[in-house]
Amino acid sequence: MNLPELKIDRYTARVPIIQGGMAIRISTGSLAGAVAAAGGIGVIGASGMSFEELASEIKIARDKAQGGVVGINIMFAAREFWGIVNTAIKEKIDLIFVGAGFSRDIFKVGQDNNTPIVPIVSSARLAKTSERCGAAAIVVEGKEAGGHLGTDRSIKEILPEVLKAVKLPVIAAGGITNGQDIVDMLKMGASGVQIATRFVLSEECNAALPYKQLYQKATEKDIAVISSPVGLPGRAIRSAFVEKLLKKEAPKPVGCDFCLKSCSLEYCIIQALINALKGDVDHGVVFSGQNVWKIKDRTIKPAAEIINELVKEVSEL
Image (cartoon, rainbow, N blue to C red):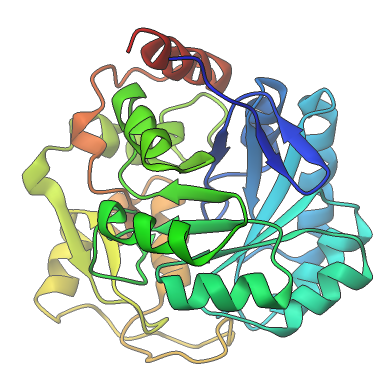
């Protein structure tokens, strides 16, 4: 099968693969730029970044992208949501992906600034609302995804419903790890796919080696669904800290910088993600998609090589 281009508003990606935005600082400008240069759409995980840091990461991505398409992903649940959005617009980001909550106002801001907005949703109802509000495309995410989850239904259940509900480009996300998964989604009618988990095992991914090693060693039994102070469940790889979460024995936050609009204070999700990012996986949360264990070759390699492998896998089907 030959892969189609992915067109979102005035932007065209040669390869219909969006690299999912991974916070906190897992997908930075280096990874986003590398994916964009390889023909996909590279995405900076902006949640948890300062405005100055985000501006710097966008510049890094631009320098590496060779004219490719670069976006950011921001959680609506983040307290600094609007500051991040305005910073990205000021830096002339191509696309803004919005997840972990829903905002109607963001579409007007995008239209006023000529910046396409792509919501990440898990239902036909929200997809239809997004289209009415002015979305440029829809990312529909199933339960197989990593990180914060908006549904307990499979992408293969939700995708047909969304395709019937809207006329926009629809990008499938959740558990997509190989060429066969991509072909399955495209044959169902998706315009493209969003993949995050596989890009953790790229050289450009900002995570420390112990974080990536959890990905390399993960089995099907190592994947767990945890609670998050954000108010949504999350999918992660089992670690000493995750086991405490599952037993409701995680330590309560010590101090708080109010990074979320609303927080259960069950534990500090930001600190847990930062610990994992830096390699302290025993005191952190390592988010992952459901099918990380299905990745056959889990060596760490350049992002461009991962893109090329996926394209080759598709071409052989």
